[in-house]
Length: 233
Image (cartoon, rainbow, N blue to C red; front, top):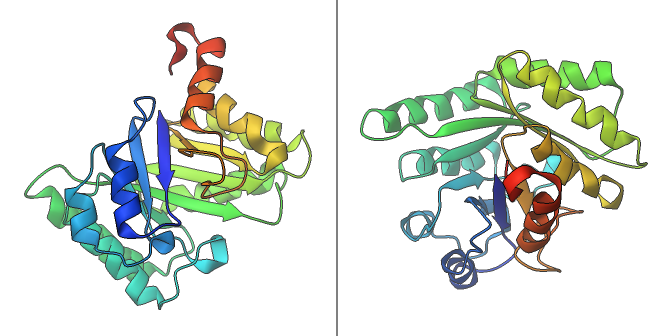
């Protein structure tokens, strides 16, 4: 699936972009740490696709300015207000992560249970296969539904290492998102879907990327049309 990632604007602009979500995007990521004048409940009421709610910590490339308790509180509120997925960093303290798991369980009693993506982002580069697999295990042991491992590619061969996690994970019955950021990692964003990743992220337009190396939704779909039967994964 292609996920349109939104952030870097105020509420009015984000809601407008949600309403105009390209048909190629199956779901939308809301980067709360990048949205000014945030009104979370209003944002979730306005959703036009299933949404991933992300509130990225500074240590992993985010811009949330509050405390860890405040950051997790927003995710917990999202869980009970209609979020379909929640992105939880594996490095989050266990006591705070447990609050989110409790909120997700509560949400599941009155409607569909949000799915938890347990994520790890390495902005230093792409480590060796052994380190990547240890990161994968750390994410999996946190107890979510989907593992997400994202690194920064510094050379083309970095793509091969990060993409190797996808068959490794699928052989163990674990859904995964895995690709490399940056210009050197752009091809991995496409190939991750070809290899069976749960989703990949794209931007609505050039200059609106929420992470380096994102294609537009249109570019991503065009590439998938060339690479996969029927143009989708």
